[in-house]
Length: 155
Image 1 (cartoon, rainbow, N blue to C red):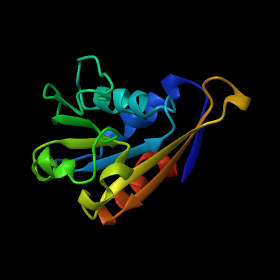
Image 2 (tube, one colour):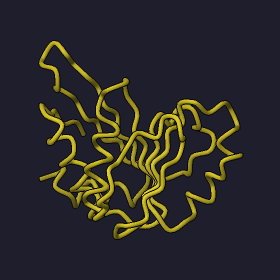
Image 3 (tube, rainbow, N blue to C red):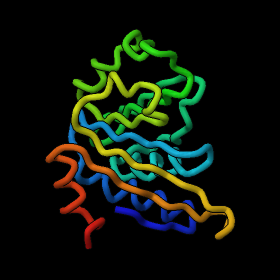
């Protein structure tokens, strides 16, 4: 399921809406080019969870934790992880924990991901404008298929 957006606010609105359907242990994978909207989407998701803190990219910290919303948000960036180093970070503990797991650059830890997740691919197309993006949702598992069907995404 694909959607086109023209502003960062539109990208954030997709994250905010989907936040209403998330539950502990959910895993959201965000993949795409640099500057394509992954962290912007996460800002909207955090807002939807009631998190008031400023959401920053976890590029150099690898994991940022936000505890002040309806559910904790664990925002991860796997770009700098070597093969197998995700295990050293205790990713399984996060995946089986009490919060929502958002992982940017998930292709770097594919072997450590749970079987069910929502993968979202962001693509830039600067020929259509500085903020033009395509957001492509790929649910894996019954829970995430249900989220897509029940949310505004199908309406």
